[in-house]
Image (cartoon, rainbow, N blue to C red; front, side, top):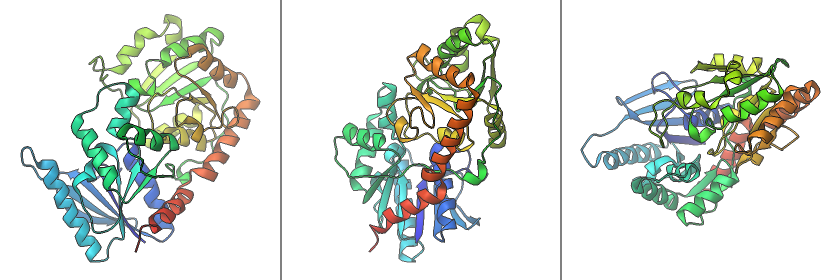
Length: 378
């Protein structure tokens, strides 16, 4: 099968920085190529048009057309022509696009188009309790209604998306995946280190984490908190630094055991995971977070938010622990229950990796995706 992915981002030096959408496409692409399928990546928003090949994948860098007021529409039509030419020349069978901002709303390909729900702007604005731009909501709804098929990375995301747009599109749940070759099981470490990795931002519970750690420290003076990731501005307060907002929330004594090490290369993040005893994710807004899967793949126990999508990754008290981020003392008690019980650390870590191998490996998810695509091919 020949599959094209339309995306605003992809983790490659030529295509710029990438977030969760690009990473999930990257992992899925590797799984598809390993199964013998052909993959084309169509990355828009680029500085120039370019075609190149690497590791069995063909890349199209697409420069946006700039005309005041109609740039997005003209770029969509440019991409539509490219997709249709590729389909006509039998270079693709199907195209997949993300739901984010509904970029495919005015693209009418002659081949089937599938949308994968990783969380639209409308979805995240709802979870963040902030207004969504009407244009984004309009385009996202139009894109979903026009799609031939819908994949959602979690049932929670699919159900909430239908509710928010007042539609009833059927969808199939196929989760995000990771390349297990890059996340080998790590040596067990019992050093009272708590790790958060990811962007420092309100929606990921970073304004709750100081209050949670204060409760951890009250009962465990040896506990250490390490934060690894990019500092972000706060969309609600307008503050330029979430980290600066966090600092006064820590108790003075507890703060002495806190270290913010900033944004790190991927290899360094993995080292931090290896050296941690437990990873924590008190987030409020996700679709299916890859960071949780990465930590679990490296055989680390996880304490995470119990909101929405969470039980689609973690079975509470078996391969991780779940709690609401606003319940600071209860969340802290679950962290301490892992820090103080070496047998639980080992058992939960083993179960976590087992879950990832069975459900979230790139090979498993690639096979599920191919089976879904085949439903739409003539």
